[in-house]
Image 1 (tube, protein in one colour):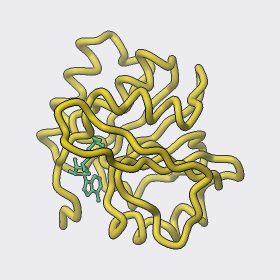
Image 2 (tube, rainbow, N blue to C red):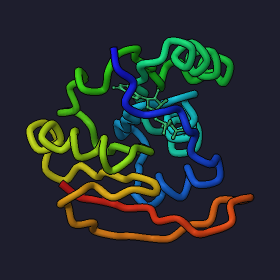
Image 3 (cartoon, rainbow, N blue to C red):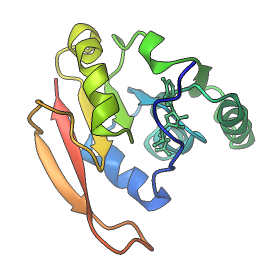
Length: 156
Ligand SMILES: C[S@@+](CC[C@H](N)C(=O)[O-])C[C@H]1O[C@@H](n2cnc3c(N)ncnc32)[C@H](O)[C@@H]1O
């Protein structure tokens, strides 16, 4: 099994901005591909009343995020799956909210093109999806970070 991406958590204060940028609505289905400690699915469920699926390959992070989900009483809304995001069917997603590098996103674009429904929003912090044109780009400065960083929204 190869881990193509390290666990670098998205700054907590960026998550709501990211989900607002994607206009997440109650009941919508949000996926985080490479969900780390579960922070994006948790905010999506708790603060946006979405249903959320986190997909994470590292067992330690899966265990940690499932514990957090349970602790916050969000088990009915959040599922954390322990497998590669390359093996997950994305056809029911309303929103994909991720923090992945352009290199990894580039490898995922054939899958996005095959599986994502028309109108699905994809939002990613810090890196662009190569060859896709963003519907919106904003710059955000996470608290404690020195510089602003971009965030990109795409519409399939
Ligand atoms: C940059 S971190 C982002 C974590 C989380 N989304 C966040 O924003 O805090 C990327 C995550 O992707 C996970 N990852 C890497 N390759 C993966 C794969 N093929 N399938 C599922 N998760 C993967 C890593 O273990 C890591 O937790």
